[in-house]
Image (cartoon, rainbow, N blue to C red):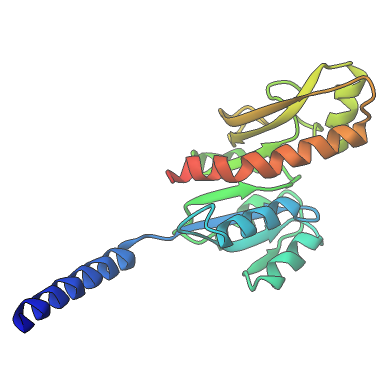
Length: 214
């Protein structure tokens, strides 16, 4: 009987070693996040990675195109962060610092337009969240409150948010995930913005998981 007991223990040990082996082979996905503002969507991504909602991933770098609180959020979580002033050289400077092992570049409230060459080099690996139901209210100048004012002025019956791939055409990439809500007669640009933010926080992690293959 003692011998049988020993065999069982050895078997359990082998299983534990095997599981440990598998754990070591799990590849962490590296995310680079681009921000321009307060970084609430960045914070949402960080929180969902920490909770395991986005598994086997980490934010390896946060890049801002202007001084903003998004950089402070990165510092608070000990995430490498860089400020590259917005302008015609932003994309070329960004190319120099993005780690080669980056799996996904996420535009989270990022307002600069990336150069077509940069987008082509990272095709299928850059996503953005837009505060409207694309293809409506997309394109140059359509961001933040500009979108919400346009929605109210047009008396739209619905609005929402879209996560999409980034291409050389502004807001023209394939939609990954989209969710809508009803716009009522009582809504204002401010209340529409609040509703959009709630949807963004909901669908962004889901879309990231989808692109990463989780």
